[in-house]
Image (tube, rainbow, N blue to C red):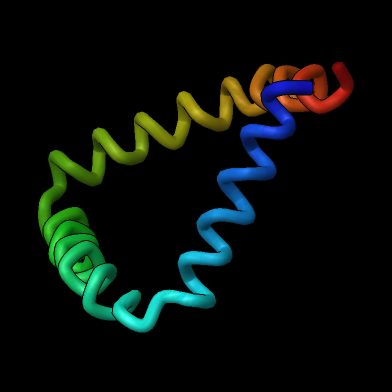
Length: 76
Protein backbone atom coordinates (compact mmCIF):
# COMPACT_ATOMS: atom_id res chain seq x y z
CA UNK A 1 0.00 0.00 0.00
CA UNK A 2 2.83 2.40 0.86
CA UNK A 3 4.48 1.63 -2.49
CA UNK A 4 1.31 2.52 -4.36
CA UNK A 5 1.03 5.82 -2.49
CA UNK A 6 4.64 6.71 -3.23
CA UNK A 7 4.20 5.82 -6.92
CA UNK A 8 1.03 7.92 -7.10
CA UNK A 9 2.76 10.88 -5.44
CA UNK A 10 5.64 10.69 -7.91
CA UNK A 11 3.30 10.56 -10.91
CA UNK A 12 1.15 13.43 -9.66
CA UNK A 13 4.17 15.50 -8.65
CA UNK A 14 5.89 15.11 -12.00
CA UNK A 15 2.64 15.89 -13.83
CA UNK A 16 2.16 19.03 -11.77
CA UNK A 17 5.74 20.06 -12.52
CA UNK A 18 5.16 19.65 -16.26
CA UNK A 19 1.87 21.53 -16.23
CA UNK A 20 2.74 24.36 -13.87
CA UNK A 21 6.40 25.03 -14.62
CA UNK A 22 7.09 27.95 -16.95
CA UNK A 23 10.76 27.06 -17.15
CA UNK A 24 10.33 23.39 -18.08
CA UNK A 25 11.90 23.92 -21.50
CA UNK A 26 14.93 25.57 -19.92
CA UNK A 27 15.15 22.73 -17.39
CA UNK A 28 14.86 19.87 -19.91
CA UNK A 29 16.84 21.36 -22.81
CA UNK A 30 20.35 20.30 -21.66
CA UNK A 31 19.14 16.77 -20.96
CA UNK A 32 17.42 16.53 -24.36
CA UNK A 33 20.55 17.76 -26.15
CA UNK A 34 22.73 15.27 -24.26
CA UNK A 35 20.32 12.45 -25.08
CA UNK A 36 20.37 13.38 -28.78
CA UNK A 37 24.17 13.39 -28.77
CA UNK A 38 24.27 10.01 -27.03
CA UNK A 39 21.86 8.55 -29.57
CA UNK A 40 24.07 9.73 -32.42
CA UNK A 41 27.10 8.17 -30.72
CA UNK A 42 25.27 4.86 -30.35
CA UNK A 43 24.35 4.88 -34.03
CA UNK A 44 27.93 5.45 -35.11
CA UNK A 45 29.83 3.10 -32.75
CA UNK A 46 29.60 -0.64 -33.53
CA UNK A 47 30.94 -1.67 -30.10
CA UNK A 48 28.23 0.36 -28.39
CA UNK A 49 25.61 -1.18 -30.69
CA UNK A 50 26.72 -4.68 -29.71
CA UNK A 51 26.55 -3.85 -25.99
CA UNK A 52 23.13 -2.22 -26.48
CA UNK A 53 21.83 -5.29 -28.32
CA UNK A 54 23.14 -7.54 -25.53
CA UNK A 55 21.34 -5.38 -22.97
CA UNK A 56 18.10 -5.62 -24.96
CA UNK A 57 18.47 -9.40 -25.23
CA UNK A 58 18.92 -9.66 -21.47
CA UNK A 59 15.90 -7.43 -20.91
CA UNK A 60 13.71 -9.55 -23.20
CA UNK A 61 14.89 -12.75 -21.51
CA UNK A 62 13.86 -11.37 -18.11
CA UNK A 63 10.68 -9.62 -19.28
CA UNK A 64 8.43 -12.39 -17.96
CA UNK A 65 9.98 -12.14 -14.49
CA UNK A 66 9.61 -8.36 -14.55
CA UNK A 67 5.93 -8.59 -15.49
CA UNK A 68 5.35 -11.16 -12.74
CA UNK A 69 7.07 -8.93 -10.18
CA UNK A 70 5.07 -5.87 -11.24
CA UNK A 71 1.78 -7.76 -11.08
CA UNK A 72 2.70 -9.00 -7.59
CA UNK A 73 3.55 -5.44 -6.57
CA UNK A 74 0.16 -4.09 -7.60
CA UNK A 75 -1.77 -7.11 -6.36
CA UNK A 76 -0.57 -6.77 -2.75
